[in-house]
Amino acid sequence: MRHRLLPLVWTLAFLLLAVMLSIAVGSVFIPPSDLWLLLTGNISGSLPEPLATYALIIVSIRLPRTVMVALTGAALGTSGAAYQGLFRNPLADPYLIGVASGAGLGAVIAMSIQWPYSFWGLMAIPMAAFLAGLLTVFIVYSLARVGRTVPTTNLILAGVAFGSFATALTSFLMLRSSGEIRRALGWLLGGASQSGWMPVLGILPYLIIGLSILLLSGHALNLLQFGDEQAHQLGLPVTRAKTIILVAASLATAAAVAFAGIIGFVGLIVPHVMRMWFGGDYRRLIPLSMVGGAAFLLVADVLARVVLAPQEIPLGIITALAGAPFFLWVLRRSKNQGYW
Amino acid sequence: MLRIENLSVSYGARRVLHHVSLTVENGELLALIGPNGAGKSTLVRAVSGVVPAQSGSARKNGTNLLTVPASERARIISVVPQVASLPPAFTVWETVLLGRTPYLNFLGQVSAADEGIARQSLQRVDALDLIDRRVGELSGGEQQRVLLARALAQSTPILLLDEPTSHLDLHHQVGLLELVRTLAHHDGLAVLIALHDLNLAARYADRIALMVDGRVRALGMPNEVLRPELISEAYHLPVQVIPNPLDGSPLVLPNSSQK
Image (cartoon, rainbow over all chains, first blue to last red; front, side):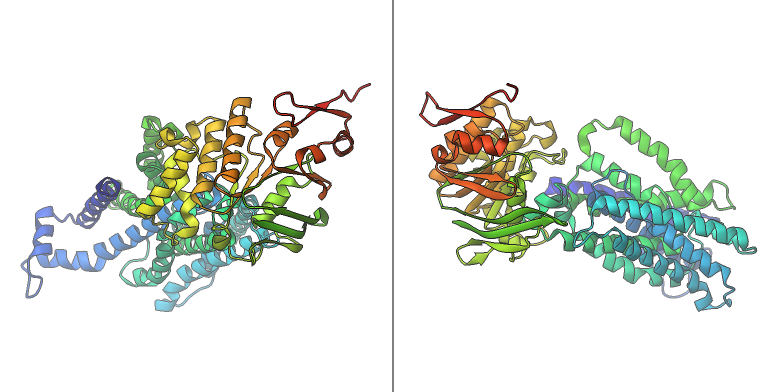
């Protein structure tokens, strides 16, 4: 039992470190000693400077951002692992069946409308992205369906085709529109541009539902690795299980995309790294990818804040720039070559 | 006892099984033979609920296996598939434990009793020494034994095998069929096995069903079904049948199709 939980303990420790880093680092550096004081000391009453300022920065800026980034990373890592298992394809990632392209289209359509500068005006774009992402999954799933079954190849092909269509429409809309292009581009490249606690509350319900279902799907995913037919003969209601996992993973992905844009690579490499290090049992891989995804994206976000400070680099650029070499390094070093 | 009645299956507009009726008794090894495309695999897939049937039933006692939920069916029927691509990263132990799925909750938590049954199943197919190996490293014969162990771990009264010997060498073919025959005669399982090799069927099966074009063309003891005129017609190939010098079972020898 200890041996089985050890990988999770390691990744959780890494996540904790990443959270600390994410809270401490930014335009104002909060020394670890002060952070410790704030964590342990009584917060009630008046705080001496600079602790009071630090507390304000942490509660209203750093903490919501940290939670947001961690949730996004967790969603991408987990749904990436689920998609890879569902499609039995090592190249699958959360965006494979067009969720991201659909969500991107929804966001750009929303941006082309001049919303009033109010709460609902600000929420309109992520909401549109989320709805469009879910709608995409629904359309792709219906298109791929043959009778009672949904063959994996059909699903991937329909997803890729619909994704290209949505991407083309997005580019067209961006060419036609004027003022909001920069904002749209920034969003598409992946940036946690919204701040404060409101976006966190907005994405939480979808994430909790999606991720909880995926956490319970490990055994079903293990069975599906033997193919639909054998999984069925071993007693799994295959079509229902696949549909539930697909919807849950897409829910999590759409929520992440809606609020943080398109952040490539996390959903692809985090599950692979976890698989190489800790094996392919999905009952372990899903929670490990969740924690690992959160930690990885937090570190990337810290880099995005400090590398060209005070300017911020879009997160998607960092994840690919730092993620690709890291992934290749793990791939080369892995003695576990037959891991997939 | 497995009672298949009037089973018809179509793929799209093409009907591949026409009103097939067969009964496999407990303790009996029934071999399905027939040329490619005769419907042997389709019969196995239909009875195990993988492809929907247009009409007919497959019953165990009163239960129609075609209409029960997958998990209930998996407690009555287990299937040994052809060795296809197994996920290479799984260990033998993980693979065999999955055979307990119909008795587990959706989280797949196994009890000590489940582990005991999985271990016994591995022992039964003489594969206990492979327990920590990954299935991707195993030979075809070893993989087939592991798949049989997984089916045994399902603890079902009915066992279906879909051409399990097609990737095995002679030694492993004989080993597997002897084991399967023991499972029928000694453990009382009702065993239905699709086989390509007529002579293996003749030697190990209690009864043989010859399928042609989705219909049962002949059904009976090996020497009743493996008759030259029946086989020649089914396979479009002139054959001779002589008694096997070892045990007197029929031995089918193809003549050259070129005169």
